[in-house]
Length: 247
Length: 332
Image (cartoon, rainbow over the protein chains, first blue to last red):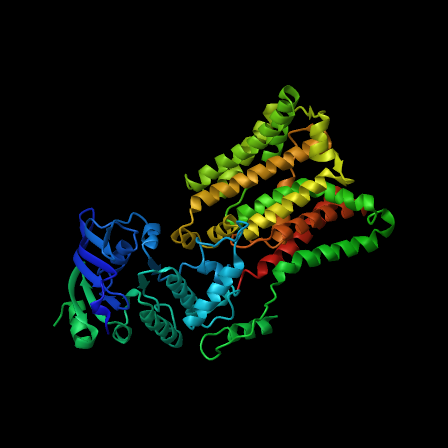
């Protein structure tokens, strides 16, 4: 575990977000290092999704700073977050169902050949390569998304994020809609992201999953950051009491 | 079919199989238009053997008659694929043809063509802005503009028909020929090829499909969904205007009735051709074959001596059957 020695890919400092009179997030600070998986846990309404939206550029924070590899950024849109190398895998899978796997991999970023037309060959070969590396088992790059199972779809969504993420992947409950076997498969894929030197921030409701995957756990309760623990140095009881506020 | 679907689903399942053979699943919907076309063609070829159906003259007539509908159908494939609809294409045909004819007679060829096409693009632009930026449903917007511009077409020339006598215009847009092939065929071929390439092989085409398939996914992927919506409605307006010019060129006159009865034919041709009504999937070549099928149906039923009312009933039933088969795939 050499993650802590390198420069963090993402630094959040004193992030605050208010919606009119309501404070959704107060004084949140977090560093994520390359090759590190950080889990964000908390009860419903704790502010996890708000935080993901801030990091992915959907919301601007009311105050505080976001630093990506040493550079302080202000992101006004999801496109800007993407330009900074941050990719999000959404809970409800932002995939186009009737299109092929490879078209989804390159959705909105399709490569063109020298005639200015879609470079399908490149898209297909890159898709096949990545799908193989991540061991996402799909029939072929030509398969239509709607013919895939939930786990395969989530695999494609993660593969897409991996293809484009230079620095950070945000996973918003990646296995919430999956069965047991598919969850295991997706967890393996998430784990394999560590070797790619990308930072991963994962939201999950499953503490088993959090303990299986993460290096550190960050707990939110009602918009307040309760604490960050190294996964190896804590246990479920401590995390649960941090989440609920009950000792 | 359901058996093979079952196995396909199982083979595609996640865990045990590391490699799954590329199973080409048969989507009936993609082929129904070709089968239908073939079936109707064979039927008429046999039944109307002695009524001149199979003559070169009759067959080429079918192609010429369907050219404007085919061109409108190409525009509609883009609109439907983006998850929208354009009901105003018939009215655009009339307004554009009339605007072109009036301008042509007063200011000459170039002005006529520019004003004619410009009218279609402008109506498409109005539709597009209302749908993409004011966020009104395209069904309602184009239903309204369909009526509105049908009225404009009527009032533009007081229901009079405007003669189009410019030989260059009529030659270029419908009555002439090049290398022995009628200009309407050239237009059809060009529109289909360009339409197919734009639809299948460009970023724009991919973004149109993504928009109609899952607008949110398109949006979070950085695709400007409103711009796509505006663009498809302008495409459809522009192509409907071109269809109007072709009508005017072929009939050597423009009238408010042009395009009036085309909307249903065009929608049927596009749906039968494998384009989904709710977006994300479609085919330009399918729309061409669908349009030819509709033309052939018209032609054959007339040659069979059916009364107009019987023609309408038979045509309606056949469209119903074809559409039912086309859409069954979608429901799973």
